[in-house]
Image 1: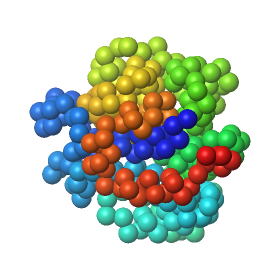
Image 2 (image 1 turned 30 degrees about the horizontal axis):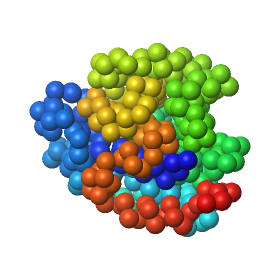
Image 3 (image 1 turned 60 degrees about the horizontal axis):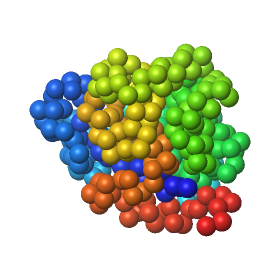
Length: 305
């Protein structure tokens, strides 16, 4: 089992995407960075201009916040996470996306954590779940409850909730020993709670082995889950044993590579383990020591070692 790799690969994928995140012109990425095989600082006109090499995007920062909240409170509760999130995001000096702004505004107006989520259809809300999978992998019912609560807190959208559930199920199956493609197929057989997303996931599976840049452009480089999730499935189906190439190709495909990377990194990390993550990436990730300390402190529930 590759518990820690599940979280580490998810977060390092976000950090790898930081430099070129939300650049949709793949030629511009190539011209500015070459082939991105190491962590990079964002360009001066980036949405993440306050960040440097080894930092995270706003998605990664919120994933790390979720891990810290779980550790500090000995498990996930929506109320504790909402309080931690609100305090953190009120003073956040990184990029605030529409989902975060809307959620903050709703909290300020007195809405409860159960009601305050935006209607955003972006994958980002569903892509932050690696810490929950790590904690609750042996308790699938509890895992799905926490995944829904975490996601709906900022992205209260039926498709995003269905996508988050599917990603959690796939990740757990991979931790239990299934290959990623087998885990996706089994999850589809069990049913995805959104017909369009079901079809998009199947399209992602069918694209295995195709050119990644062209495939992700065809599915859509945008943040919206109906475009982004089939890109994630393409990555894990095409590069099942090659996490480094998967995450590099993801970034070079442009657009919302950070959210795609968080999701694909989680699943591939669960499959191939920490040794498959380039040491340079882990060494350059500024929060690496903090993450490892928290993963040591916060063992999966019912984990015997």
